[in-house]
Image 1: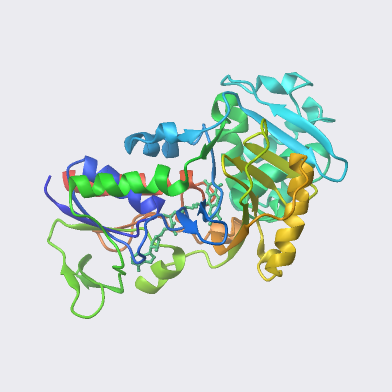
Image 2: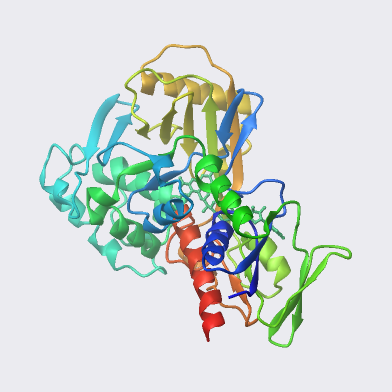
Length: 418
Ligand SMILES: Cc1cc2nc3c(=O)[nH]c(=O)nc-3n(C[C@H](O)[C@H](O)[C@H](O)COP(=O)(O)OP(=O)(O)OC[C@H]3O[C@@H](n4cnc5c(N)ncnc54)[C@H](O)[C@@H]3O)c2cc1C
């Protein structure tokens, strides 16, 4: 096939679509508004810490098959590293209690039957109480579906769903939460091994894809923002990048629009998109973790929710972080560092730090916002949508992004065969 596809946006969704199409032999042009690829999943040098940091710590699980497949397809699956077994260390900050959740390595959640593997102070009955999530519709609230209190909720369900949905769990969509639980906890330890791009998001998930695209075709054009689309009958006929910079599309050419909801809505007036977002706050500290520290620690009862130990830094993630977006940076850094010292068992002055607040990290995964997610097909026969905010059946995650990109690419390929 020699048809040309224009992919707009070089985030994970656009890169997944573009690399899949390029591997199928199509000529793929990627147009990225910024000077860097990766969108909300990228690394950069930060002068304040003197480190290359990620805009946000990203956690994948081994059950994220599309994301792992994408990494494999760009040759970097080995760059997603994690412990051999699906084990998660937790600390309850107020009581200083620590425990390790051991999910085993199988395809069934057999760990539920072992009191030493379960969350402390929980019984099998507590876990059975999560069952209604498995078949809940996306229109239902989590708070109306399961009990949002008690040790299991506080120590496992809330941290998991907060991280996955990026909303206060009771207000989240039960159907989206159910999809996460089905694909992870219910699929046994083999689906729950935590995976981290230890050498950085860009090195593992972005730059290799950009290089692959450059090697197989025109590649990514940076600083090339799409400003408008011109229709020609039931097709998109031209792409306007500003001024004289107009690209006319041939009769077989296609477009994958893989931009966030706001630019998508301004490029396609009338398109329904989610309107509400939630922030994620990350804090990075130039401090090498003490020997033996787990790569990931879940934190209950603190400002910190997850502590990541990278070889050269300690980093924390705080989801649903709108309350912290206006908080004074120095005060926040000091408070977070105080908690890190307690979690890591260290005593040290505040090292060089950086706080990254992504205000529109994800759309709000509530039933109302989920109902606004469009599918990949548009009123134009040669224009398809991708993005973590399109209707993937998952919350806004890398897994959802890759699936959306794969789906848009498959639709382009299917249309070419029709
Ligand atoms: C702080 C943070 C932490 C996160 N943690 C996790 C995690 O732990 N696990 C997980 O799975 N997910 C996590 N996510 C979510 C994950 O990052 C996103 O789901 C994913 O990166 C979205 O990719 P995307 O390609 O759909 O969108 P984006 O990354 O937003 O990419 C869209 C691209 O389109 C470009 N663009 C916009 N307008 C135009 C235009 N007009 N023309 C050309 N280009 C344009 C943008 O510059 C951008 O590069 C996190 C997100 C954040 C922000």
